[in-house]
Length: 219
Length: 409
Image 1 (cartoon, rainbow over the protein chains, first blue to last red):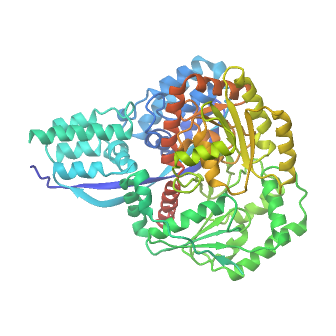
Image 2 (cartoon, rainbow over the protein chains, first blue to last red; image 1 turned 30 degrees about the horizontal axis):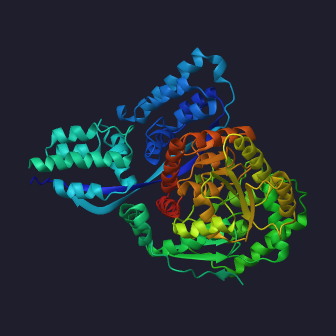
Image 3 (cartoon, chains in turn blue, purple; image 1 turned 135 degrees about the vertical axis):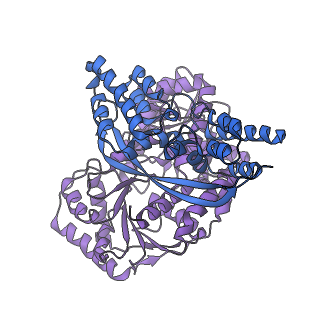
């Protein structure tokens, strides 16, 4: 069995939600908020909310889309916001730019909707991140599998979803280590193709473990 | 004298079966850098009320993580609690004629408690307005102070809030149950949800035989749909509106309605509301109005578990933890979009939100017509509570706050 020179260190994460000073009562306000809010706020309402609502796989992908749907009843705009896939972004700036573009285009095309009051206001919040090492590492595929199987939801989310921003690559910690640490590029790519929008975190983990098991049977 | 509370041990590993061993390992990992460091929780009551109920479970769990945590209860005379009750109502927006004497009483009791309480822990967590002025005991740069506000400050009485804000602004941070409840403050504000304990008597699994006994005791037919609202008899919970919604549903479904809440005998307004409810019920044999004792966790648990749909048709609400209780039991919930309820009910994902009697009735009819959708909402609701509104998540949030403060963010 292959042994990696650099071990995979399992880490977990916890987020504190900081309440911001901005809120939106209309789509025009939402656009202004998206332009002005902090990077931590964009992260909170997109990446982090995907982690905390991982059990929803139908029609929920970020807080902006959910608010537009539930509180402004603009299904068309909500669909466009929901369609922004965080896997396509390695920087918050790029994600913010696309969020603004989608909302701005809609407000320009339907200016009469942009100032209509929403049912409830949208409150911009921020994530404050704290990580903690779990004191567990892996050098082999077996140890790696065992570590993933025992991770909390937050730990799995940290390595599989939010790591994309940290790595600034279109990949995640697991795929990165499988490719670079163990030289298993094909497995790494397969893991990176698991759809985090149509699978829950538990579902994604189960698929990942099945892929690893298939690889182990080859050995 | 102030009171330091000693609490029964609650083994953290008991939660592993429900939540998974990974979640408990995570709590231990986050707590590791905080081992042995001192934390002090201060509130104004040892029993009764949601804050005491949460601290009673939270403090022993923190001890399990080797944190040096103490829970202190401030003391006050009847005059103090009369004033703080008025403040509480005024902060919720009720009319209040501010008297200088009230502010003096508030300050005098806070000063007395500053002299008797050991306010020297590294992390001081002060709950609600009553002990807010204890911040005067803080020595500059010596420790971290945070204020946990459990009430809705969205429309406070100006005079009372201005008075309180002078103290709150001197804390290192403030925590609110919803962004909507917060104020513009010069200090960081954090979102801290209230929580339920899945192992408490109100939420633990129950023997079906016990549930059947409770249904028999209150003459509820287990073979027909049961709609339930659990809440005290208070106009803001709109029990009369619930009956009106039930009557619309009843045209289409042979269902029963259960309205159960704490006894109204010691609450003059509650007794009046109860009479209004009974009048509206008009001896309908399928409406059960149940006056429960003030503390009846097993009965509440059984009634929630026996329900087909749980309703929370409040006109105003704090956080509304009865919603989390029902969701934890995988019940489909139809609730008003007020207070903290929309945080728990993501419309069409973890339950149904409504804005009127007619809307409530429609959502109930829809769910009775589509039991598969009702079951899915219940399942998602359970997951949502597991992710955000359990006592273990609350503990995790505190650990994260302390770690954040310790690193100086």
